Amino acid sequence: MAAHVHAQFLFAFQTTGLFCFSLGAFGLSWPMLLFSAVTIFIAFVGPREPRIYLGSNDKPMSPLPRSLLVIFIINATVNFTGNWFVFGTILPGLLVALGGIIEGTLAETSFNQLWHLFAFLMLDYGLFLHMFLYLGLL
Image 1 (cartoon, rainbow, N blue to C red):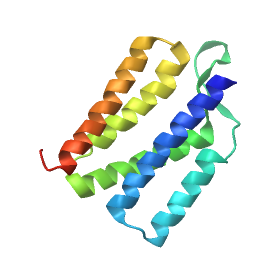
Image 2 (cartoon, one colour):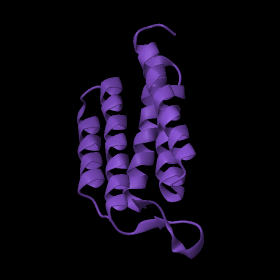
Image 3 (cartoon, rainbow, N blue to C red):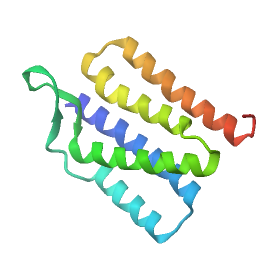
């Protein structure tokens, strides 16, 4: 049970970070505020079943609810657009999203610490790239 809650909150907070950047990129318009409200509701209050199943023995992947994965993918896509709009590249958002996907799919299902390290490094590289782009160093 604790692994389920951990994975759900990890993805919920990553999704929140994605839409916060998108709000900064596109501004506080009504469509973006509505999008944010729907995201928060699905990420933190939304349905927890059905879950995503992958592999043998119906082992849960992540174990993430489908609704949370869908809203994560939608937010990542909007975030890529925001990265392109602000920085002219999608690489920072792509690294952060891929780090989250690796953490939620490979690391949490295999409990292999190398996958956790790889996901952590991808997330950090994406965040550092954001920082350098914000500061105008790249």
